[in-house]
Length: 411
Image (cartoon, rainbow, N blue to C red; front, side, top):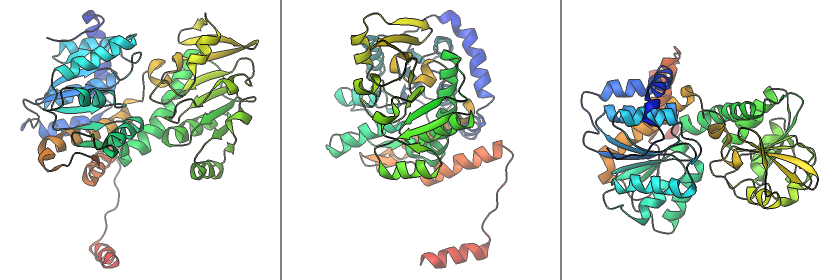
C-alpha cells in the first residue's frame, strides 16, 4: 500500500493513543453510528492534510468506517506523531508523514496525496488545496478547510477567479472557532510552552500578539495562571475588545522591553522582528501559536547566531546584542510541535464539523458553486446538540407561542 512513515512497529503504541482519544470524542462516534449502515462515503477517495495526532486518527478511521479510501499527510513538518502514523498505516490509511520532515519531504508528502487523486480534500492551512490547484484537480468534487490561514488563502484564490471547486470553511463554524481556537489552542499552547521550558507562568509579563480567537484563549489562560498580560493588535476593534476584557494594550515596540514570554497569534508574517529582538530583556522566550512559521522572524535569529544552542528539546538559545533569547519549536506552532495539540474533547467538535461537511459535500457537490462556503447552520447546531448531550446537558426549547412571536417579529 502506498505510504511513507517512520516505523510501522510503533503501531501498537498508536493504538493506545487512538483508543484514548476515541473515548473522549463521542460526537464522531455518534455520526459514525448514525451512518455506518448506509456507508455514504463508499468508494470515495479522501485526501487529508492534517496534523497527524491521536485526534486526527479518530477522524481518519471514522471516514474509513463510512466507506472512504483515505490518504493522509501532515500539515506541519514537525507535528506528526510517529506512533499514530504507524497505527493508521497498519489499518489501511495511506499515510505520508513522519516527525522531522524536511521542507522537501513535506512537499513530497503533499504531492503523494495529490497523486492519489482525491475526490474530496480536507486541509489545515491550505497547502494541499494549493497543490491541488497546480495539478490533479479535475476529479475533485469539493473540500473543507480547518484554519483561518487556509481560509484566507482560499478566499485569495476565489477573488482571483482561480478557485476550482467548492470548499466549506469549517474554521468559521461557531462550534469550531469559538471553542477550538479559544479553549483548545489557549490551553494547548501553554501545554507546549510548559513541557518545553518548565517555567513558572505566575508573575511573568506575557505579551500576546493578536486578539483573534487564538489570542483571546491564550490571553485568558495566561491571566488565569497568574501572569500579567499585554495584548498587541493592529485592529482597533479587537484592541478595544481586549482593553474592555481587562488586558493592557501596547504597541509591540513598547512592550518588547518588558515581556518575559512573547506568543504570536496573528496569522500574519513578520510580527516579531529585529527591532523588537534588540529591545528584549535577557532570557525572553518566543513562542508561536499561529499555523505557519512566519510570525517570528526566525531567519534573522539564525543569521545573527550561526550556532544556536538547543538547551532543551525544542528550545534554542540565541545571542542578540549580549542577551540570550529563547526560540521555541523553531517558530513553528508550539502546541503541536512541543505538545500534543488541542485536547480530544475540543477536536471532537472541529472534526465532527469536518466529517459532516465531507458528507454534505459528497451528497450536494453538484449544487455547490466553486467558492468558499460557510458551514451549513444545521451542521453547526447538530454538532453543538451532540456535544451538550455528551455532557449530559439539556436546554430549553421555544414554545409554540414563542415561535409565533419570533416569526411575527421577522415578518
